[in-house]
Length: 379
Image (cartoon, rainbow, N blue to C red):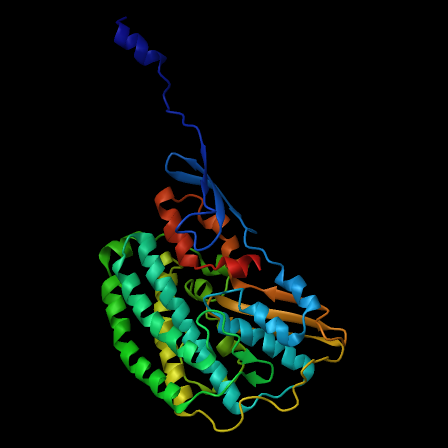
């Protein structure tokens, strides 16, 4: 027997590899916040993924127990800090149920306008940063050009560009001016053609589609079982939108569609958000066209509200899904208990399942498609 033959006989028939543990984050440019994911990989394939949260925990649910109801609205700005208007709204809706407040029609319409503008701003942030995640930088410049215009509108009406505190108990902080309405309509006329540009730049780019289609698949059954909501749920083809299924603030009076995906891929979740921007424009045009006259705040809102003992629940369709607030009152000036049902927290949990079996190169594409904000996850 030759030496070569003898060596071949001694070699193992299968090549064995060791698994490797890799930390993704918590300081990583594509984790969309302070998130750590512990990845166990075998070669290029992920065998285990453990999301590690809590780095941004600020205890806002506990803080609410020693804050007045008006002061709690300020806390809500800090959850989903790129979409603060729906945060303000959901707390006010729950508190108004406890207090028995009736919001004037004009205030309801302005709440819808602000929340839909904020949905546009939030989805533009997703659109721009998701392109960077995949390797396309140019869409980011386009998205932030339009997003700055929306933030300018917010600054005109409430003086802030991130933490707005505009929606208040019983209505809104201040009425909008004719100049603001004119600028908002001007922005919508400018923005509609830009959506077609986004599709050309990114949505139907062959490289982008190859990186996102058939990747990170979530079936409709799995999406429901994990409690997903928002575009992550609708991307799997499940038709659920709080604005349609349990309308609030007069959403039942607006004509709009609920975009759905087909396969639950990264691309489906991405394109649901792009289509939702078109629907938000439709809602905004209708709201501005039929904006009622009248007061923007309910009468009889106490400076130090003390709702009667009881409990209430309210939820809204936030930019990232079904955002809910459960409030308990014991008749005092602060809530006895506040619990936040945060969509990002539930949407994030499924990562431990859908990352397994994918390649390391697909981790950021999948994570980015879920579109989490860690302020809302940790609270």
